[in-house]
Length: 457
Image 1 (spheres, one colour):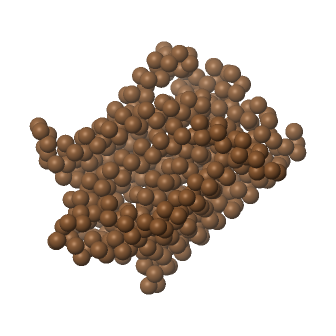
Image 2 (cartoon, helix red, strand yellow):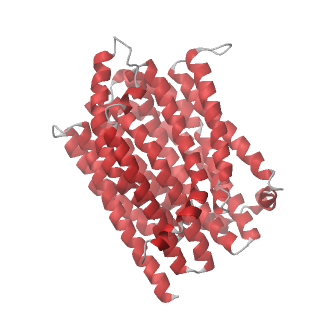
Image 3 (cartoon, helix red, strand yellow):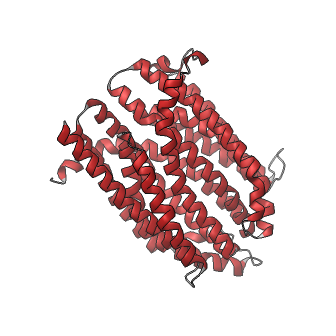
């Protein structure tokens, strides 16, 4: 097929995806801002925040992954103009997301003693524990917010979450500054100030999103006069059947990167700090693919509702092609500036930390070179996952991602990182192996399913 067929879809793809990308970038920027501000305090504090956030990232992956079940269901009902079904999806989805947020916080809170048994430096672990408690609490408003966000995205109204995230980021920066350094009437809390800034910003985000949607006419039929009598076992089950595998897919990938944090900590504080710098940058660029993935989910879900399977395949491939072009650009930037990016995260004027910081910069530069390569595989696998979710195909992709990341990727990371001289870079080569395997297998899965739908139509 002529490439111009795909290029024609770029305009609509961008209009749909850019608010999602900005919103997701906002989530990551919260973490990056925290890392930069905490990193200015010291490399040990940065490593501690990295360790604590690794637990929270796992929980966020489950919560956000689960909530994505709402988007294809809403997109399908929106294409059919079924308001009653859309309201059922939202109400029951909000109940499930709220419950999941509480469960995830509880698990992290009671699993905190595991920090002492993970082979991490003792000073890093002691700093990480109180930080973890506060950031874990922010999971409750965050996962609740995801129910609103995924519902609005399914209705192709993607700007709401963009505005919510902008407000949350401004809130985070302000309270980080006030609480880390003790400005005005606020206490000087050091790295704990960044944790409280994150918590406050996520509470503000859910409050804004609720009232913003309630003010819009198109959302009033879905949000007004909600009662617990609308919670139905059948709809809870329908969402859960898609949500659980979707959550597990996100968990398998994020846990792979968290595993990289833990492995880096076993090598040393410098390796862990370097890993956090490379991970922060990769997470930021990953949000572009995540936004395009949601766009694929929405558009494929709509076309599935309209039963236009030829168009379905065209829009999915057009978004995958866009992702490849964008990430090729990111890869070039990572290669060109791999020695300079790490300097943003450290206090380069500190004489006491000069030796440690130089080692961190060197290691982080090596990791960014590997990240430049695996970004291409990463964007293909995550956008294709979005298309498969739009088809409501989640069980086989869940198996594919598990095998790719944990049977192939992580063992390579362990071997190269801990048992060879490659060190921290070897950990990221394992990530590359897992992501590339996932990209190939998931795209083949979409190719087979889309052909089947077209031939059987």
